[in-house]
Amino acid sequence: MAFTLNLAGLTDEELHALLGADQSLAVLPNVSRARLGGQAVFGPQLPDQLEFTPLETALPGSTPEQSRLIAQYAAALGASGAVALPGVWRQEPGGLCVQPFMVGQDTAILVRWNEWDPAAGVGVQILTWLRDRASGSAGVLTGNRPAGLVPAPSEQIDVHVHPGTLGGALLELHAAHVLRHGRTRRLPVDGEWWTPWQALYQLNLVAWERRGLLLSPRMA
Image (cartoon, rainbow, N blue to C red; front, side):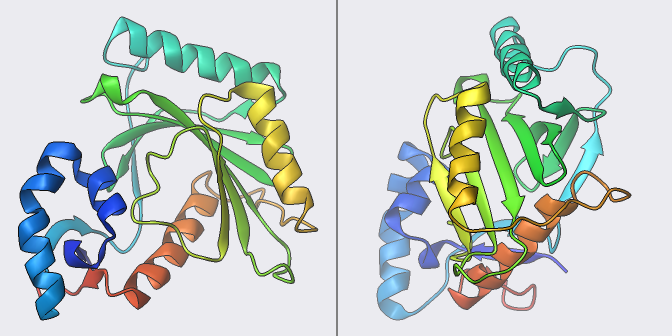
């Protein structure tokens, strides 16, 4: 089942990050009126799970500069002990391209970029799930760009953003964040690489529904 994102439920910061400066300013008057009247403003559709489609490409990236950055990020992760997993994939919703990696038995990594908007840059996200929730968190998500965090993730995810940090430095920061929470959960050895990211998306959907951000097809 697909949902429709309720723009009136987003914060102004989320609206700006989702739509960009010009479009968010254009819709803000309508959003403000809807908020005051307790109404919804229909935004993009969100599926009930992520979808990953393999890309047949020998060189990821739509421009030479973007390809160079992707290779730089991948090399920095590889030099720090991350293992590249097969394939380059397109992720929906969002239309981002991703290259998966993993570290050890408990940490999933994505290098992320947008081939339709190379100026948006290249980013890294690192995700580790926790074995118990004594700290109040279910997992730790560390990235070097805020992109991809709209709407805001579930409050059960401990989120950290370190702009511009790459490779081993970003992995070390993530490991330090995880260490404060306790034991980690191993990734399934026979599962698909996207399993931990699907779990994150499902947890986020629960939080977004509680915030009134998800409209059912009947409402839309």
